Image (cartoon, rainbow, N blue to C red; front, side):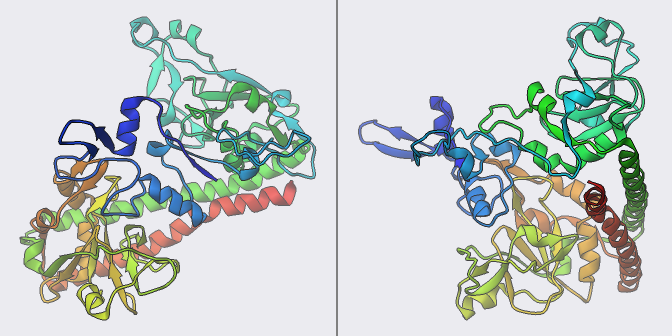
Amino acid sequence: MLIIRTPTETKAIKQFLGYEWSSAKGDEGIKLIKDAHGRHLTPLYEETNRDNAAKLNSLISANFDGKLSIPESLAPFSVAAALTDMLDFSRATFEKQLSITPNRAKVTVSSKWPNTKLANVAQILNGGTPSTSDASFWESGDICWATLVDTKQKYLVDTKRKITNAGLKHTTLLPINTVIFSSRATIGEVCINKVPTTTNQGYKNFVCDPAKLNFEYLYQILVHLRPVLVDLVPAGSKYKEINGKTIADFEVPLPPLSVQQQIVSECGSVDESEDSARVHLESLNGKIGKSISDIYESVAPLLEIDKIAIDIQYGLNEAMNEGGVGYKIFRMNEIIRGRMVDNGSMKCADISAEEFAKYKLSKGNLLFIRSNGSLEHIGKVGLFDLDGDYCYASYLVRIVPDSSRVLPRYLCCIMNSAVFRKGMASLVVKSGGTNNINATKMKNIKVPVPSLAEQKKFVAKIDKLEEFIAEAQAVIDGSAARKQAILQKYL
């Protein structure tokens, strides 16, 4: 179930609904709150983009599709809960009343080995934050103090910020091989410290009893159970956090130490393969970036996109359906690694053949994301090279390259590059929580245009690097499943 909650404070309610009531004589009624461009301001929906993931209406649609993921920006207004958690089964007489502050059932992990509470096999230590206004806690400090930026990797070997010995009275010094667990914000993120470390208060830290629990095994279990651990957050909480008692009482499978070690060894091999693939992936992406930089630094002429395109056109602004009625219509989430991808669940637009003809995509067309709640997605470009009849939505712009001057694949690579996107970002305008860049600004951006022969060499090189990237990415993407298979085998 998806529960949408309105704020309680008057001003916040007005911003949530996106309108206010006027009782002024001659001006009575509902008055929409709009920005300088006349767009309605509300987290409920976007008038011109029904699929904006930063709006609540898209969450409702996603929940029906079984694809609900609540972004942080909408967490104050929405919460997901199981229907059974919204009903009270404790009374002798069953009542069908639904509670919008659901109780979560106890989360358990099934295993052939006995489960034990974390508090029985590990000392659980909290972190803390020394006052930032007292320089004696921070100045010339050399003791690691971990925050979210430091705990992204499996092993923590350093931190961005350090504290002094004086600062230790406000936190806890953790011994090496403590399992550091994020209980706030990025809930379930976990790492192991390889240097004495302190953390802020957003962590619960486990010092494992070596006679009972292998710290590397606990790390693998917590990584595996992260989706379950997120459910330990009380529904309706203003601040998402797993409290100390809940995490202390959480039970994990406890096989013999020999079995734990076998799991650690096999999962460790998977981690090593993944780490190697990530290093390789970074190197490959670096080579692509270098190739594009070389193009920009060459003597190739810089031309506006408008001068190397036959047509630049906004997409179709029509209602979409999931019943397969009409023509398949591309949206922004179907741009994947620089290509338009039909994922088998595309929406359709029920329009006439005459209307479709205006927006029909042809091979070699590029689609450019012009509007999105996240700046990260603005300006992404996808090359259309599929068979079949497709059109595209209004928040995309179609570019038809002039193939006598520029290869579509070449232009797609250039427009997706960090160099191009850096220049484009300065042209983006944010309004009502949505980032926008219009086609006029986009088509005036200059790109290097070498000869077609040089473009072909560049594309061949990039395509080969992309093959290697796909192989490395497959290793990374498959790591979780391989480790899951190992845990299932032993547990």
